[in-house]
Length: 173
Image (cartoon, rainbow, N blue to C red; front, side):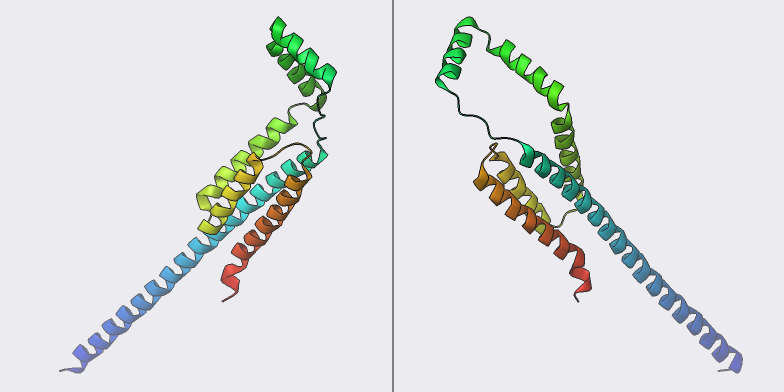
């Protein structure tokens, strides 16, 4: 073989090897960028969910326990049923509630639903399971129930710890 052929083969091999190494490096960079983007999206979704959950929790903490109906309350309820005024009284109560508190409860609930929907799209299985547990406990809410509040606060602490562990997971290796 002549020197020209050998030189050409060496040059072509070097170019091919350089191209392969560059392609491999660029592939690793793209994978790392996708992973960083996914983690940033997860972090944002977790932050939004926790902020909405904290706002709802603070609002629930401020609610007073529902009073136990007295004998007079029960007799007034029976009189309203006989007169067919339950719907009217319900609407008046709702309007008074809105006049006093505004739409804050509805806005907070909407924010929590949006944040939960966003997080569900990017959540790993452990976070999704914890979100289901939060929903189950939330459905058991009763105003003024101290046992529920204690359970809720423990669950919130677990949510924070799990979110923190999910965000720190790649840095532990």
